[in-house]
Length: 215
Length: 215
DNA sequence: TGCTTGATTTTGTGATCACACTGACGGACA
DNA sequence: TGTCCGTCAGTGTGATCACAAAATCAAGCA
Image (cartoon, rainbow over all chains, first blue to last red; front, side, top):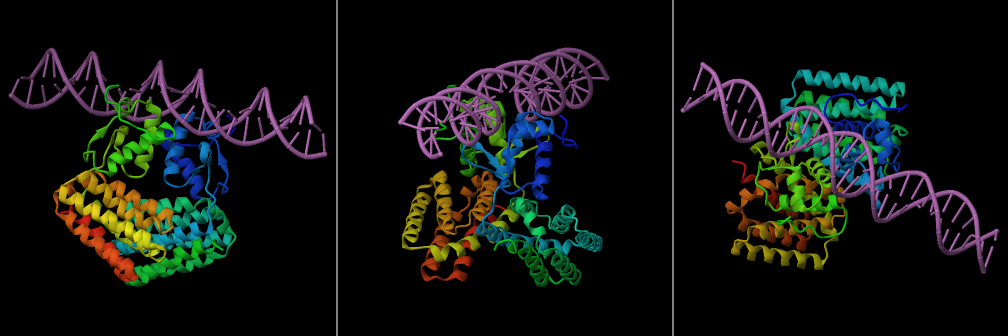
């Protein structure tokens, strides 16, 4: 009871549990290979086991968690080939999303992207790791939302989720400063209406981030 | 109790329920927009509500089912834009999977693909609709399994699942004979080691099937 | 006849409990 | 001292129950 997490917001309990765990995974707050227990999460979040089980089942279906045999649940420890594969999927989907969003990208969106990128630069210089990941995803999501392709975006977020636990390792690399440059190229291509350039910039941003941890 | 479905096989109950429903959806045995109830499925399959809820939650996470507000569960009725989007996703992922499988495709696989395609031709001429869908998916899956890209394959199967309920409408079209031709081109490209041709053939097969229903 | 309103049934949700199984710790024997 | 086995705490699974909200149906009113 003492260390109940704050699971605010509306909706059913299993939805809140799902969002809470999903955020923790996306932001890299859970160690890769760390094992979770139903009763542990339940008591931590102040709910019963039932909604926790549903949330976990959902996360397992999305690849964010793996349930080893005998039902033990843990965050996946990604191999190098797996990371390569996830990077390849992102390199396929995200340029397409960006290209679809470009004709619908008006000035307000570009200003918002510039603003977020400025935040990223500031967070990088401050060394705020959790904020950096959050802002980085916000940048991409803001752009892709304009693509009007919910299924494609959902698949992309699934890939983000799968690579989430391993994201912790990325703070050690110096990719964060490069990401700001990539984002600037993305914004420039958006302004110029240069679709091939946009695809290239997105692809470089995406593969640069993930491929660095696969060595 | 009278009309219990046969949910054989090993594994936990929620897994069996999941497989049963997933197969029904994949084979287009469920009407688009049809609504399902927990207690209905539970009594039909002879289990309690708990495992059914987990299986449904998993299927909802994969986009195979949509839970409208207030938790009502139904199969999604796809709009035309959604079908276009799903076709675009398949056109992105499946050529890549085929290209990755090609260097690993030895003669036994090609023979297997030819065998499956012969079955498809036979099933089409017999008008066996459920068997056709099953064999068609078997063709693609057999090829993609060689790609050694489980995450990409899982995402692709998710897309198949999402377009499953609408597959019923495809029986009315005459795309089935064209599919056999596309498959022959795929096999020919595989034999010749022609990667661009393989990508084109897969893309044509994939988009031809789905885009026909979006009009 | 058409619409509203009320009660009743149906449905999803979440908590609790019993059960089977796994994994680990500890003691006894060779 | 090393190995084996029994015990026990801990875990996931599934059934049952109580509850609230939604949908459905029916009767009553205009």
